Structures are given as structure tokens and as C-alpha cells.
Length: 390
Image (cartoon, rainbow, N blue to C red; front, top):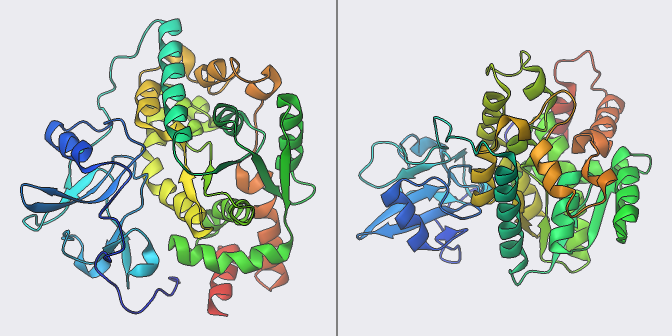
């Protein structure tokens, strides 16, 4: 089932900025040079070049952009497009790294991640220093915004480093007995920081599911489970008067945080850890719009310093020794983090947010209580559909 959107799809409304994420000159220069990582945190929208509008989206899809499905594969800047799926009748994501003009028969892929891999920085100390400098640059730019920022804090190294560099208040979300709440409390104590705990109830999930489905345009169980904690912690952050929510998104993909990149099992096609990491980076355009829209639906600006172009570029150049092995994942990233965080925080592992918060468990329980048993195919997604029908 597709979430029901409004009935009248606009072209980009007059109140909607024509370009999000950066200035037009930066995009024009990137189009001319083909540079996929021009020093931004993502962008999307329309840019005028020599009197012609170009519909564009950055290489990692960090800014969501949608077009009408019945206009694909030939959407143009004059067609209906939007930053949110709710504004369109049949929203279709505009491809990451693509550009379209009224003269194109289809969106043209303009930017791709550097491929083949750039030569890694072989010297470990140099590579680590480049990564640290990139992370500091990204954090400085994020902190320079006028927004009042809070951090979605799970107690893991990713969000802990973001919290330390931004010096922003910490919020954790989860059910009372969840791993994330316990981990966040211990990490905050080790860092000498205060922590706000957003304790969830099953009714919070029932209420939020339809809102998230409409905001993200997604109804499958996994996407809903991942988006729920972001949306629910965002609600509390917004209610407390903040303008933006900072997250540690991207670290697992960029630095080798997944077991499968070490095992090289059936879940990856690559034959090397380096290749498997690149596969995970390439998965980001599918994931990020869900997370961005969940945060925006809570009324907040999403801020993801670890997805800044300079950090992505530094990650792509890390030597094998700073990626992952069976002993340590995200090795280079942790070596940077330990310069800012207590070692027990910098070196700890954590569960994925949908499991660490117990949102996946409780949504499954609600589905079974509503009659959607595990023997049914994709029973949680069917339960999500039922909530949208109400």
C-alpha cells in the first residue's frame, strides 16, 4: 500500500526554495567539473545555467527530491517536483547524482563516487590525520549554523563523537529496558554530560507509524522500524525548543561498521573489505531520504556531519589498515574518536537503532496482538498497512 498523499500535486511552490543544501554557484562549478564531492553536505533542487533550469541531486542523495511517477523517466525542472513525497500524486525519487533539463529525454547521471577507487593514502598516520581534519571541518560547519541543535544519542561512538564536537544536548529514545537507553546513560556519564531520556510506550508507535509512512513514502517494516526512533526523539527535541537534530548517520557505511564487510558473506558482492565498504557507501542514497524525512516530519532540520563531502572523500582514501577486520570495525574512525572521547565510548559497539531501542520488538508485538502472526508473510508490513487504512 502507498500512503495517501494530497490530491493536487504542485510544481515547486513559490514558497519552496529552488535549491537546498548549498549555493547555485557551487552546483554550477560541480556540473562543469564533474566533481562529485564539491565540499557540501548534499544538495537538490533547480539551478539556472545559461538561462536553462537544471534539476539536480547530489551524489549520495542526502537531500530528498521527488518527481511525479507518470513523468518518469523524463522529469524536468518545469514538471511537478518536490522535496517531500506528500506533495505529489505518485512520488518517485529523483536519482542521486543526476541532472535533468527540459532538453533531456531522461535524467543524466552526472556524478558518481570516485571509481575506480582513488589511490589510498598508504601512510596510516597521514590518512588518520586527513580524516580527523575532515571531521573537524564538517563539525565546524555544522556548528556554525544559526540553528539550536540537539543530538540523537545512542551511546555509540558515532553519535558520541558528533555530540562532543558540537557540544550539543543529548537525547536518547527507547523503551525503558532497551540497550540504547542503558548504553546512552553509561556513555553520557563517562563523558560527563547530561542526558534526556525519551521513554517510549507502545501507543507512541501506533500513533507515529502513519505519520512516518506519509512523510517517507515508505511502508515496509524495516524502513518504518528505523525511522520511528528518529521521528519520536525528534518530536521531543522539537517540543523542547530546538531547531535541528544532529545524527551520526553514515559512519557504519563509510568506515566499515558492518559485520558483512569483514565476513564478505552472501550479503555483499565484493571480494575485499575495501570493496564491501564501497558497496555500503553506494547504499546510502536509498537509506538517507528515509532518515531525513523522518527528522523533518518532526519539525527539525537534520544535521549529519559525518556525511559531509570532505569526510566521505577522506573515508574513500583510507588504507585497509584503517577500515575493519574481525577484531575491530571502523578502526580509523575509532582512532580519531579516542582523541575526543573516553576510550570505553570510542571503542564500544552498539546495536542497530531499531533493535537497540526495542522499537522492532515492540512493533512486532503490536502486529501480533492485532492478529498479524509471524507465520504470515511480512506480517509487520501488513500491520503498518492496517494502520494507514484506519
